Image 1 (spheres, helix red, strand yellow):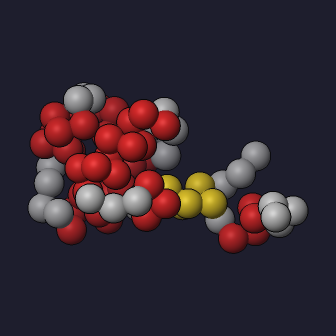
Image 2 (cartoon, one colour; image 1 turned 90 degrees about the vertical axis):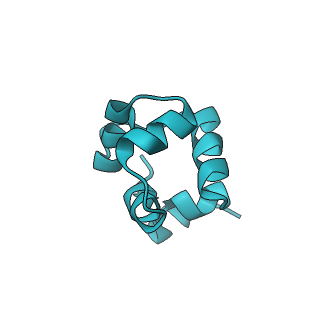
Length: 74
């Protein structure tokens, strides 16, 4: 299984957002944001795209594969 680098917390803090405010902007609960940041929940593509829109960055800046997980991908 691929390992994902998750930059949600770093981006949220850099934007000066609380978990609750980020959740509100992405239309999810604070608990969902907390679980994403803690790595206990992998968001759907829809939620990942919403987070990218809130942060005004590409999805790949929020979630990315660990370098070793790119082996075999052309």
